[in-house]
Length: 465
Image (cartoon, rainbow, N blue to C red):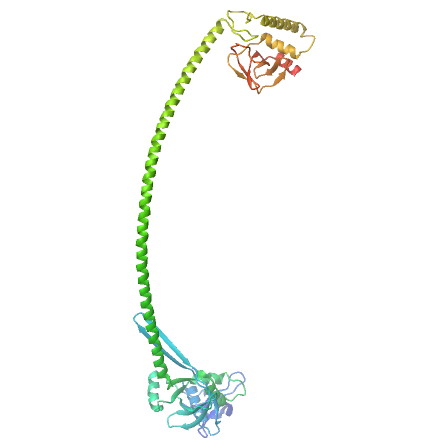
């Protein structure tokens, strides 16, 4: 079962309220509870704070015994004859709250008025449990002293309705403020005191110097402060309403201006759009005319291309007919393998009537015979290889490109080693009137004679190169 700590008790011998510091330990304190009048025991150990507690054989446990004991001790201390004539006092702040609303605007105002340090003179005690205090401002001693009522309510009375009823009884003077004592703050100060500090002196110090130990039940200036706060809130709400009206008017004007600007912008956009459409139509017409001209030009170019193709086809047919005629002519008569000119009649040795060609052919034959006679006794020379090619060589009917084949320089031209034949290329071009130009070499047409490759010719080319 919970047993509250009690700081003060009633001594049985004389009925006075005494502190735990002024009695003996245990039941020797000879004290009783101020509420249920049951026996109390003084618990004055070395670990816990000193306090009174109900004896274990007591049947009653009082919930408000501590608060009642503090209340009785305050009455005793404040009405004592040895109380100092001047006590420092810090009145609690007066907090005034008010809230007003107008449609969707709500304003709440709070005004806190700090009381100043004054000196307290206890000069009267009425039959009702209250203390009348005279306050003198310490920073303005020239001012008239003020008077207020210190109300010590019964323990456990905390409802607002009790305060209103009490105010009608304890404060018949409208210009006198009323302060209500909070016993819990004083009890907490007692339990937190240091060793050697008197509990009676501590509650007086906490009462007058701790701002949270008291609160205002009635303040003479509260109604004026509240009225002023209400006026300020009304003025603030009116200002906000006017500001809202001006803001809405400004927004409305802004919307109207934006609409005008939007219409003007829309008109400008339509004008620009019309110009762009006109420019697009003009560009489309110009493109159509240009496209028609381009189509006509393409058709003309196509016609010219077809005519050129037709001319080339006819030229190719004519060239093929000429080549066929020359082929048939060559099949019938042939050409001179020395100068490359066409023969007017068939010849077994493919030699024309030109004296120089006849001498060259005879010389080649002599060299061939000499080479055949001396092939076993001496090696090949460049001249021998050239004579061998000229003696047994022939000209191709189709042009041949030999400019990338292995080459060897001779006195009259070049000897070229192709993939399947060995060539002699004349240093000079074809003779005047010659119909055969069958070798592309050294950047131009040349007359060439070729013989099929064989091991003997390959060996000879290797020897002379």
